[in-house]
Length: 86
Image (cartoon, rainbow, N blue to C red):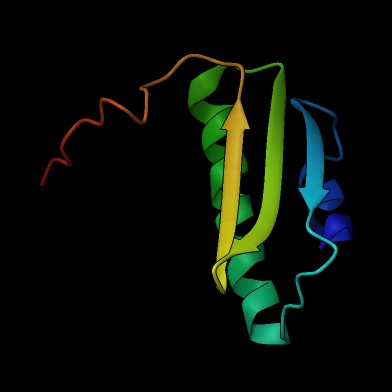
């Protein structure tokens, strides 16, 4: 997974820190899903946030897989989400 993320950020913009829980085991289908989530998250960081740094965290809690992409750029806060437009 780390190799895939390095591929997505090969140009170094933004600089990305990756943390993957060593206890997590992803089957091939889950690896693809996680890769696509990270791919979309990092694309949004590049396109909308104007960030210099981003962080990717992949782990699990209570048996559920969690993927978090965060950055130091501008954007909406999770505490105050905007409704989707049709």
